[in-house]
Amino acid sequence: MPQGKVEVVPDDGLTTRQRRRQAVLAVHTGHGKGKSTAAFGMALRAWSQGWPIGVFQFVKSQKWRVGEEAAMRQLGNVTWHKMGEGWSWIQRAGTERDHAAEAAEGWAQIKRDLAAETYRFYVLDEFTYPMKWGWVDVADVVATLRERPGTQHVVVTGRDAHPDLLAAADLVTEMTKVKHPMDAGRKGQAGIEW
Image (cartoon, rainbow, N blue to C red):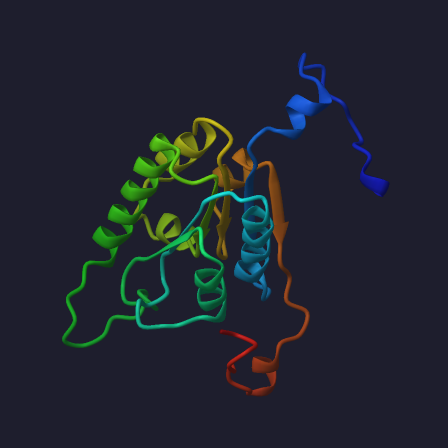
């Protein structure tokens, strides 16, 4: 798509302006770093348009204070939801949290918000994991996102995105890891990972 020119113009009866205003479903997947960061970059663009933004984080603890959350809360017009205690694939002794139920309730809230057109831009951060683990029904997710009303834009992040989600998406970006500091034994650090 050099210089912003489309490669194919579909014979769908829509004008260029009508196509430009269609809602976008984006998926950021892959094993490289930057999936959530890119989604929050999109959210900043949405914020600059005055759109209400809903952020739903599925495997990040309510206790964690990540840089994107702090910045976007300062900007306003953003509602932030966190489901579960974080790193929900790790079972901790003495905790009986039902991560599957929490993810299912998070998805139910997103469905309610989509039906009510609560937000114009949604970040479903790390949402590929509840789909992968069977905590939410992939067919339901795909159908709901495909049939959402209005011009609600959605970006889904996380590794191992389901093929049906990729097929439904308008924009798919795969982040590929070439090199990472953890390869050299370095742990994550403030300002870079959170």
